[in-house]
Image (tube, rainbow, N blue to C red):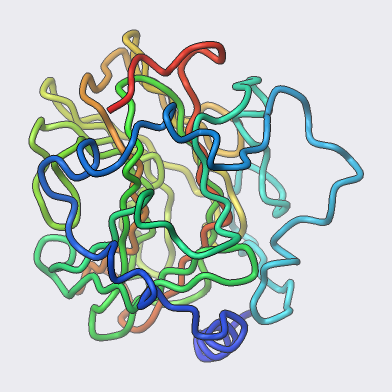
Length: 314
């Protein structure tokens, strides 16, 4: 099993210290108007990103799973416990976009280069619920991945995409490393004007990767909040292996996917322009203390209609 100290040293060396100190222009909270006023719409900047099409199954001759390529320790010993009820084998899981033919993303982040301040707002603010702090210094890019690093004192990381749409589909590929389960990996949709410690201005939120408390281990959680109330679901998936997490938000409701398979459905949906955020949130007193690493392989945004614009962009 990969130790926390080994992961920390390996990531810091292989990332070659490419911290987001180079992203000073992008620092700041997601506050009113930033996602829509300072950033262009997803459809307006699609040409800037080389986004892979998902209209056809993956090429069987493509390179081996990034779980091997991107492992900063060179180890592949990241396996599910014997009692895990993981939905897939530890191969990274299928992509909902491929399974359901979502077509070409309107915007994507493959994390092959520095983060562009035109695409991201980097949190520099108090942490979740005022606990700890989100710092730009805790983000790293290297080996085709984005790393969010949480320190034992609660200093961690978070960032929000400036690309928003009312209806559409979002998907990301994430894994955690063995570490403190007081840290929760989060991939969520948040309305424009929120994030980074700011409360939702519309009472809407979709966590398509959240964590439900379970001592000694992470448990994947899907969470939906609308003005009509809250709904959620959970899975026993082992979060220390690669998985894809996706959500579809439409006028008819919300559907969540884990490794291409539906695991949440509701007739409710959010009705505001929503942006994708990636966070490693600290919950002191809920789980073991210490450090944690979250690795993100990619984030992709799709229109609701493969030939359309996802119900409008912000």
